[in-house]
Length: 381
Image 1 (cartoon, rainbow, N blue to C red):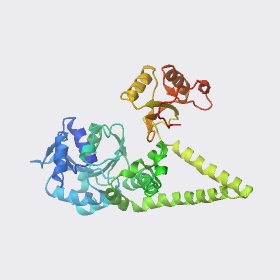
Image 2 (image 1 turned 120 degrees about the vertical axis):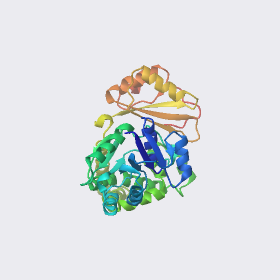
Image 3 (image 1 turned 90 degrees about the horizontal axis):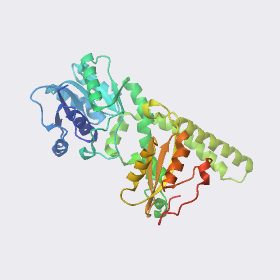
């Protein structure tokens, strides 16, 4: 692949262009918002403007409802030999494309399973897709040449190609992407008029639950419109579980001991289902990995986090994941290093020996570690 075009220079489009450009592909940037295209070009994503001859492939980074219309317009102007898109819904755009253009063999749907809470070209990153699944949904008429070009785009961007039918894709992302965004937004909406003291108590759990609620409502409105039925089905099932949880909690709040016992059983069962479901989320290399958190309280001085990670690396600690929970109004943060269960105890002991304020892990011998003096101003528990 030598040439490509990216239509739409937001977060995903610019990230695709950056990834292709750094691999030597000459990328043309097109956007109705010229300032966005110029910004992407300034970042090194490509050159602004149409090519003088058809490029190898055009990537349409536009909302799902605009894929068919945009492809028809660009094909009429001879933009590319093949076309793909990055919309997070696939069935409706595919149907629209098949209806609008005369030679739909040049099109293949695509959806990189990557993103960020921020939007726009300034949030773009050339490595955004590395190691991430990138779904391709060839239709019954997609040509082998078009499929191969799309696979090359995925490879150049560092993604992992996954071939699916468009309807199967939409049902899957309704469960793993679209419904979680709706739930995060609805939970975050509970905070809009909450007392200030409640917000001050917010910890990492709330941040995790509401993190994706910061997405562009207009873009997400378009996504949900295109996949409304599948999302409604998942939300309907979730609503049944929420109703069951509400009923169980009402029993727990009552005076009758038998009712309270039944309520506790129902609550536990619902929570256990959640635990079992979460265990099915694959870790790195597709494996399901169980981790134990090692929590370290650090001060708010420059270089503290880097020093902690350097010590962990020197001690040969394999950190699978990491979160930071800042103490509101305090001068400390709680860093949670996710490690394998077998390495949790050695990690705690070694970090403690290095002088770090490591929290005890209940049930492990490290409970006997002596307390270190609390960091001044710390509110982390």
